[in-house]
Image (cartoon, rainbow, N blue to C red):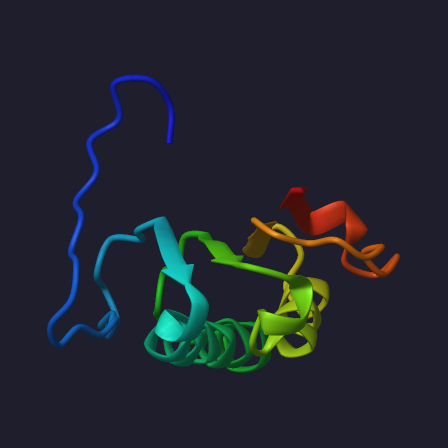
Length: 119
């Protein structure tokens, strides 16, 4: 987002991302903490499937970017982190993630370092 961008927020409840062919592309900002990543990880997998299908078959879905912001106490509590890094690598610029840790005391592994903020 940029200054003065319009955004929509949704907290809790039943939610999903199901773009239809011909819909205008949207950029998603997904924010998760702890185990709250579960439904958002499913959305990321769906977006990856659509990007993969789009590249392979030329489908009519117009997709924007998906940016995940995910926080936990330590990197060991970041669920699906290796899968998320794999999605970022498979779809550079289309799927991004920033991990935030609040109580990390040990060294952060090199693979995660570029994507981690916090203590």
